[in-house]
Image (spheres, one colour):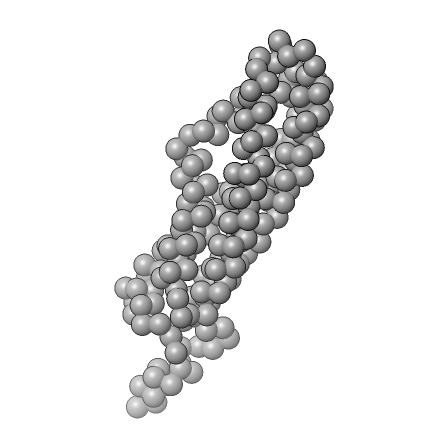
Length: 190
């Protein structure tokens, strides 16, 4: 039995809009983690220690802005709202799985990545650091490894949310047209 909150056109439109926004927010975050793993960190890896530290300090500081926070927190809040809206539908479990995957990535960010970023900032002016190689060594490999985990988790979450959106477009039921639904079939055969 489908949930009446999403079977009427108005409710389904709202649920689809929230779920669509969740896919976009999660895609933005997944892409952010991806580009760091594939381009930014390998490029910085070619730099000397002081340049590496300075650029990472500046980059971490630049991410403290409302546009990034909207997608970072939106990727958490929008799937939560969507899960609530889609209770009782086939899309619900896909959204819930995406939310769990991103919660793990969010916890890694809060518990590992941000503390590493803070330690790097606390190291101070790269030109004045006595042993920049030690500062970099403490940061680089751990940060990159955990970023890859965040990237994989958020990419999985994008896929799960996209699947939920497809199912929602099918009325929350996979591989069955609305015509085959008993109510639709009855009215269509009259």
